[in-house]
Length: 304
Length: 236
Image 1 (cartoon, each protein chain N blue to C red):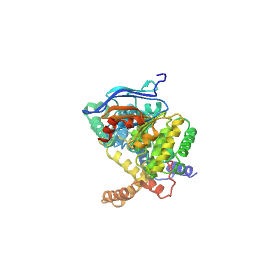
Image 2 (image 1 turned 90 degrees about the vertical axis):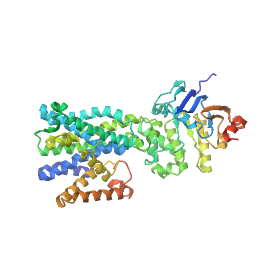
Image 3 (image 1 turned 60 degrees about the vertical axis):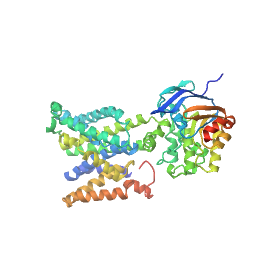
Image 4 (image 1 turned 180 degrees about the vertical axis):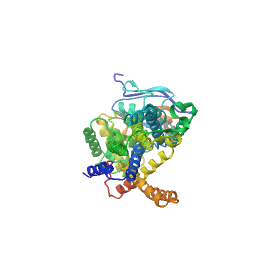
């Protein structure tokens, strides 16, 4: 009931809200998908993915190039971008998901940086436009874009909900808790990790495609910036790692706080923002939802 | 021999650098037995468990389970074939509830898995704590939970690495009684244990390892009375 009312409210927003608010919500929703996508893999399996920007950038590039150079309709370019990154992720997952801990994290950073360099080289210029970037117009209205990303965010959270409360989700959590023990208890850990990794790539990639359509532009330093990796991680930590709604709550709170600080205290906002982050991580390492579960405000179940 | 052994370890070698943790080790385990695996620290007992369960691969030699070669198979494949194990250092899933710790292992329909998990929690007497995190349990209770996980797997052969170590005598007796009960129901056990009274009282056979070599095998009492073994074991 509450969910239905919230959805009706969110769907109706473009009919009366100003572009400023719609834009802000588009950002929140895109980052909700990024954070949820990150959480779906890293929050559950404990494999910290520092290459979220790689999912976003590759899919963003694929879809942007299809729209800019091949005159594809955005509706088809987006899923093709997401499928493209998903397929590559299978190969990358098979290779990199054997590596544990900090080494996996660093490999993903290296992969992202390497891809960024590659996309900017003159050798690939005929395909990627090199360092000049890809300006384009997809011919989509802000309202349609908003509804698209709203639908995606809704489906993403639904998928996270289904997975987290399923046996597959428990297997992912078991990998986080003790991968070798999980393996000797008959869990095909490699397969579970790859499925989660690729699903994360698909959802994040889809949001990435929408993101750059919304920006009407992509270039290597913009498409693969470390901010696209770090911001969703911080949002997830903020909302609650491994929870269903934590990333969405994190993305919302984070974006608002960011917006207010930026508007009111332009010069100091990074300093204050950093301070808030440090305090949060010191005192609420389990995030907003984790804290509420611990205090008994919310039941301790995986479905939240 | 009219019956095929449940598990056959044949001439297994495993080296860590120059040191042979297992040096041409062979033995058979009969279905329905409880076998003690004894030997001083570093004799290769845990390495042997790791080789049987696929956590490590032998440098040479073979492992057969129910006549089928399982050498080189992945741990999850071996587990699904029916070999379960517990670890010397308990390795349950701490931030999962007891029920989740069992459900995650189960195969098949959700309702059946749930029923079985509940039944096993009754069996190990942890049912009241089913919704607690496993990290809330005492050390001994965690050992029971880890045994329940192996039972959830429906393993025919269960390898227990020091099941009785570090738990109070009451719980120890409960645990051993449970092992006998399961043994009567058809489960086969290999138990690594330092406490010789546990081996004497609960195992029919024993295998003694030293420096990765099998130095004795057979009836528990006979082995433990063997002078040369005791010499090895206690360093007399």
